[in-house]
Image: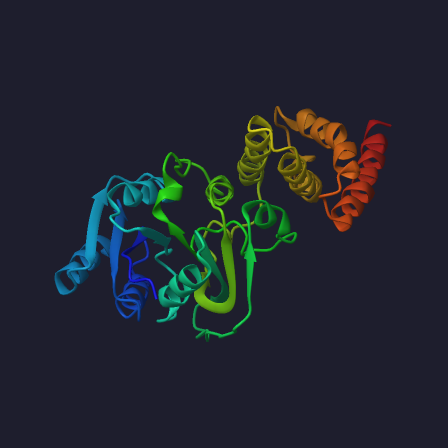
Length: 316
């Protein structure tokens, strides 16, 4: 097994009741050659003191205290001081199975991969999730990974279920002040990689909180934020002349716009007509593509007709 140093970056903000469990799961990893970078993002509770207390007990722990800048800013700050050949991310209200990093490092070493990822177990407070171990794995190149993920597949864009070669983050940063920062970033890192290996084991425990960003009801601000991330992805692949990836990215964008239509159509904001034009102007390109799954085309085709009918009724 590769014994390279792993830098684990943990943004910390208002998680006083969860941070102990998170840090302990990192300290108890079976893979011992890790540096744990706790980024106190101006947390107003006792998180900063808790982090410092753990740093006194384990010399692998480094603590950064900074003004609150959000999740992206905290991750970027951690990346800047990371010494590891590999980087991993953990959200401070989540925790890991003790074998998490050993498992991912083995996948990377045995398959000469740039990135390894595994599945997660989501749970609610009060529940105790259990890891599941499987031998199955899947090996993909960057193009296969970007176009392989299924609609709504949560494993696809999140930062925290993966282990990355450090060099993949050269000239890549998480967008500060944005929600859906993973969606705006992960594809850039994936595209730079030559090989990604996906293990089937479920070793990351993802806590679902009612007050978290992903736990909130959809509103137009969040819809705009995710639209921006998805649209930037289309532009990114267009600019580097990756036509197949551009079209596939447009298919995901159209699916998102169509699926949220009932929300944003009822609101007043300046880009509503532009969003409708994006659906209209790009759906035929998606229909003709051989790389877009048939089920995507059916969804876009049927639902866009329903939108057209709804708009026609509204005008009348």
